Image: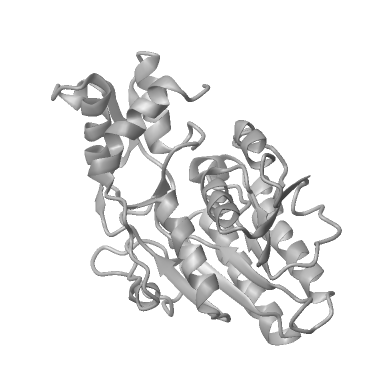
Length: 316
């Protein structure tokens, strides 16, 4: 049985990873500071498992890590627009928080049983945008906004701690995640929220930016696959294999919401520009696929049920 610490266990990705690890029978220590984006209803579900222990804490303030095999660091401030308005929280969580966890691991004894592998969640945005082709793991990092810069900074800390202190690490760089339980500031849930309130959906840059969609359940499967492979000191891209313009995503949301093919343009506002807006993200994840992992969920098969879920169950 593996012992894992999962930070950000009540967020979208963190909750899917937590569910998957619990289902494997692993001992899970979940850490979350329970910000506005945390889904507190999940905590009641997790605490029904005897192999789950919850720690309410900011990762920048954690003073002790239980003995474990992996520290899976998913906790992060992740909304690009918020980072442009004010970046302090992003530096605190994504950089200072990561540094604190690295130091806690560094101070543990260096032997197989006691020093865990640091499994860090980065993002496709650290590479910057790419008009054609796909980014591979060895590409230079060129972040375009405060959020992606904070995540790239965390990656750099990990490389430095690995070289200086011999810390073992894994870095996962996923594309745009979606799924049940996402706070309504991201495109799919916030679009449903605005439709419910008879307000228009704001699309930056006329909805032209392209995103690659990856279900959080597939991201969780990638984590399990990598851990069970026994690898470390590696970077893995993980992609959903499906990309489209944001306006195409919103068109599908509107059609699913009303269950017809009405003109989605009647429900959007295209008059917004965002500083640091990347045109397109795209990742090559052949390295991860070589371990036997590939995405199972198809966006067009998932979107209708997801829109209906947010209509009926999500608390705004």
